[in-house]
Length: 294
Image 1 (cartoon, rainbow, N blue to C red):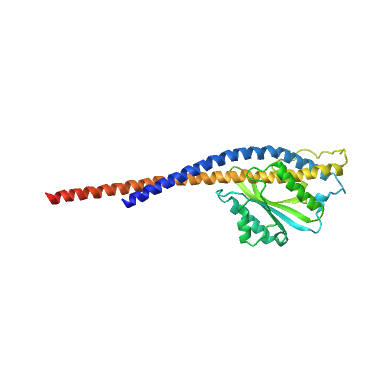
Image 2: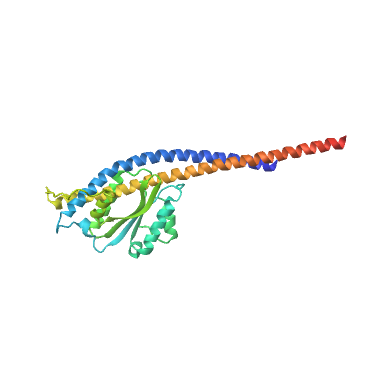
């Protein structure tokens, strides 16, 4: 009896876990659909802005801009975007592994300023004895453009004054629902040529380069376009990180639900066999008792 009771308790526990993981899978699926829509909707604007800045800087000649040339002798700043909650498979571990590899190969970045988004990266950085200069907790599960705009403007101001020399973002780049990749992106100094190439990846250049006359002057246009491009790039990083987290959690919860279902079936078979053995033993005892009384 003790064995069958224990198996029944395990069947009930596995069933409860399966209901929980199934619910979390459905929630993650809904969040993934919403975050993917937001991420995809912002990409055409970002790509068009990259292309415009790339074409503009290509025709500048000797004209330079502070956001393109460098931030002086200040410290390097690295922003790591992790998740606030777990149960999202290898999302945080692969992201933090990329960050550790980057710091091992770049001592100036490791000794510079390191800022963190999300709670899950704090423990790993503390374990590796990497101090966190600032922990941003204002973004949550659904980062808004206003919050990202304020952070990007703070980086632009500090970069322009020479307080920081380089800004990098380590985040999970969303490529498709089945493929996400940890990425180390240089935000400042801004590289419009590389951004423009990334925006046109896979496209074949068939047209001759167009010549433009700028009004107002290119320097004035860059004063408006470059900060907008930096902010759009950082916002796209947050969008990619958010949709990657949701798809990773959706996949992890689906795997957990499937495993709980398989375990429930296996435990049910074990219970049936144990119950059958128990009934056979009871019948044998009854027959033996009846034979002894005859």
